Length: 483
Image (tube, one colour):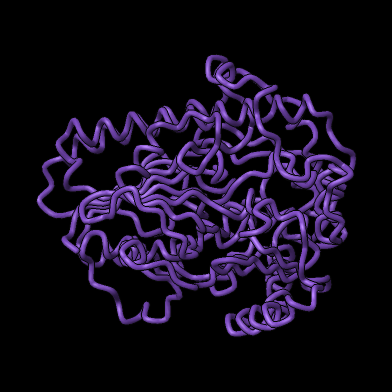
């Protein structure tokens, strides 16, 4: 593949199915859809952890969360494990970032030549309260759901600035002789669920499809899901109008994100870079929006664990849909391949594969792996996704199996059916080939406990409290204390 520039566009908490190209009947995302029509769309793409900080650590390093030890939002990536950015810098490539990174600090060498207006974790510490896995306080999400609607937010403003900076960056680097990489990371459509009024009005509430199992009587009763709802103060359902209002706001922010992406793509063309730049679009995880009674991410269901993933540009098949399972760790070899960088022998054990290669191959069986060791979970949760099935292993609880061909909404757990026994056995063997689930769970808890003790113990962590969303640069976080 001939080396080209690479524009890697990342969003935050963008559910895969909230795009036109992935089949949503209402949402207006013409620029993202255009990337799909000009390139290749992956129908089975997943995060390696359905929460921000670990997912971004996995994307940067090309390694699973249990391999990096960046378990949750209180243990952020610190540059200690080489990223694809480090490998590019070693070879003299210009590799810059604009926007949200959610790493520990701009003072660390995170692998970029320049970090432009980066959003990192609060105080270099992040959400330490989330490291308390048992005996933790309830983190009530009800207020955020009820406040959804129209207006402005620092996140909307930040992403407009990110788009402005990207357009300027492209103009400044249009004449570079050697391929470059720009990692452009938006924060939308991450909550708050606040959309510009004109975009909110595009989505009449009564026309919006509601998420799977949103009714109380349909909620999954698996202990892990019951615990998540308890932890986030979601044990009581919301009325249907509340869900529709939140959905309209979320779709409005998705369209706002698409508009910012469109401005950047216009800048790419105006600077004559369109035919010599490859593009990747993805997100760190999805958003439940009331599915199964959950708001936010945190689960291994499709609305949370699945991500949009689109590639386009020179030598990329057009209007192709690939069903081979992929995940964010595949980003590491993909970035290097795009610009013709030489792989390091030190990275020979990376579990990912280049998406450019997968895009040109017939669909094949391959497992996408995700894991969760963060707030709201008392024990680890693991997911394996094959071409047709999804397996969820809960430490200390029953496993779950879905046939996603027959049951795309994941409403029927078939793990206990006799005909599922060989499928379950195969998945269990695959899981243990990746790591020991119980030992990994114990290691995560030990590291989290050490993190808490290093700060002064649980009492000090609770005294510090937590914030609702990581603030953009220049905005002071608002902490809430917990007893």
